[in-house]
Image (cartoon, rainbow, N blue to C red; front, side, top):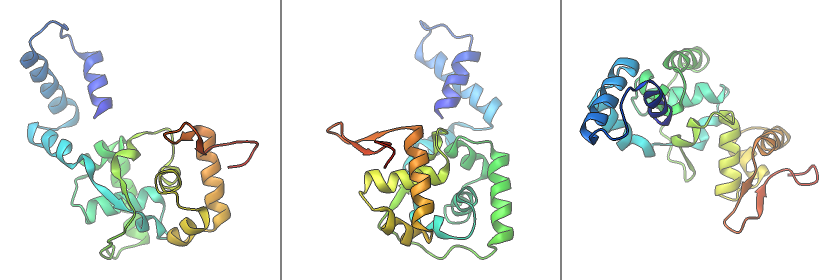
Length: 189
């Protein structure tokens, strides 16, 4: 959604001193023409902003992108367009990921009630891969250890350590006190 607002501002011929109604109307027209979203879709996106995904979705033998798209499509009933908006990706990428997931894992996900749920909103930032987002979220926000996370995701600890190190190189994570929770320090995490 942030990307859409930025694109609208670049393409808009609106002036900053225009009434708010005119600016809002211009933005709605842009969203309808460029993204195919009407006001009800935009309102639903704002309401659904806090959708969460159980972490065990990523434990399957399909890629994280495929697992995420499959979960959002089948378990949450979102359209590919909405999935694309939520993930800050093209809807065709969401469709392709879903189709690949269907070939590899045709049966639906079992009902999943995880204590650890990841907000979909973190995946809109394209600076990290989906798995890097999952690992960094679990390590920084929950304080989970890499061995515990590896058991939860059914992945080898050294693989997750590599993912965490790669994410740490891309950005540092700090807690409220300014201490590095996960980051490269002396070549270690």
